[in-house]
Image (cartoon, rainbow, N blue to C red; front, side, top):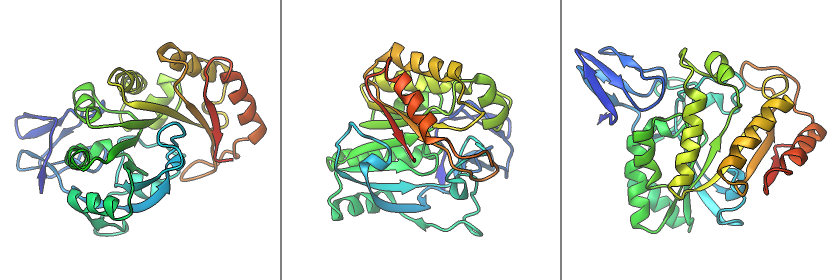
Length: 291
């Protein structure tokens, strides 16, 4: 059972300092993500090495359009998430950590992942599908090993991680696609987050800035959900934020389809194209997807 990084102690409790939720975990319990726990006053990650999906994808599926275009990438998924988006497209694994019950997967150690990448001649590995950052210990070990074998590391993430842990992981990361869920602190707080913290949007923005500062190839994705994050004001604000960093950062605007607890109608393709055209007046690379 792997000991958790990025923790501190408060009596018998473990304080997880990985993400803005800052869970205080009692003995025998887990944090809000369902992944990071406390056993006898020691922070633990019992799901270390439990992989819910392993597949070879086109890199454009991540989506990454400007990093090794046309290549394939070995993609692995995890269990759990530190957000609770009610429209999650991968909710079967992101909102489930019942590895001895309803959740299917395999125990795969980092060395086996590297061997799999070499076997299929994949130049890169993507940590994706569910939220990889809550499995920081596995990422660090697997990414370090990948670097030694000349394999690129790609993060597909919600970016909800505190700066100390982010810097540790990003120094091993070659490319990232960050999911900017919306551009409303209130939506993050009241609808997407497990806790009442209002720091989620700022944390994601800081993660994006840190990616850029650390010279990680960066692309950003926003799932456009009708009547949630599709107002002109919010989309313009997000575009302005990205532009303030670098107008060459690609922005992927993708269509929502009803999933999990959300039943709003699908994103209108014509609307998606129209907002992409407007965003393209500020940014050099705006792509639509999932239409």
